[in-house]
Amino acid sequence: MEGVSHGIPNHLPVQDNALKINFSLLLLRLEKIMHVILSPRLLKALYAHRVLAGTEHRSILKTHLVTVVDVGANRGQFALAARKWANKATIISFEPLADPADRFRKVFQNDPGVTLFQAAVGPRAGETTIHVSAADDASSLLPIGPLQEQLFPGTNEIRAEAIRIGPLSDFIDHEAIVSPAMLKLDVQGYELEALRGCEELLGRFSYVYVECSFVELYVGQAMVDDVIVWLHERGWVLSGVYNVIKEHRGRSIQSDFLFRNSYLGQSTVT
Image 1: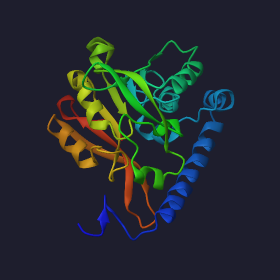
Image 2 (image 1 turned 90 degrees about the horizontal axis):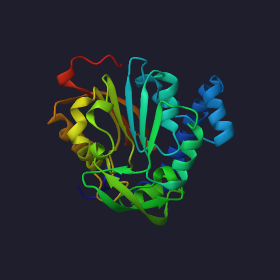
Image 3 (image 1 turned 135 degrees about the horizontal axis):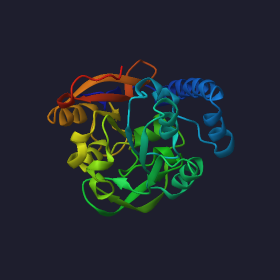
Image 4 (image 1 turned 30 degrees about the vertical axis):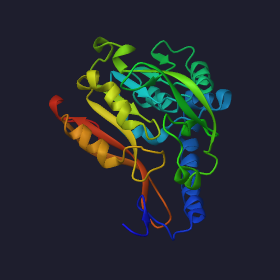
């Protein structure tokens, strides 16, 4: 459509969008800190290791979960939330970058229920390049796009690194995924390829929880509808949308999506 780029009109001042988004993220951060203060373990992770737990995910993390596979773990933000709100679960995390992986290990060094693989998940095994952002949790296997840098200042690429990558089944077997299990993906535009890398074991999961974008933040990334269609074709039903980030006119930028495996009965996550 003329005059529109990836869902955001060209005439909107990007700086205003960035200020609005950053203010929303600041409010989210303050809300996180309020929840962290109430938990000694989460507070210790913040104080000792400077890792702020992803408390915004608490509503989808329930104690009945037995396995959580955390793809795109960064420093352990989601894993900390899972340990707090799905405290019986075994957590299997994947983080390809050395620095955040090292921080993750320090946070969970005394937790035998957490395993970390320093690798990315994708369709093919081998070595690949990751584009490292100045904010390491914005790093991606796809090039960082101009809209990402404009809407989220400070996420520009600073270097590239060689990392290990492979299908999920190269790292764990089906017996490691004990039901009910959740697959979480936060991989900065690489969602569809990461899902393809999980396809062999996908049926073992009860839930998929994945961050997706409505606009192109990373070059060549799949959009929300691509991910929804891919999962729907494999028997997954969209059951919730969480943590929507919007620009100042209310247009959605990205969000977290919860899917239920229709072959395993009704979801108990609300």
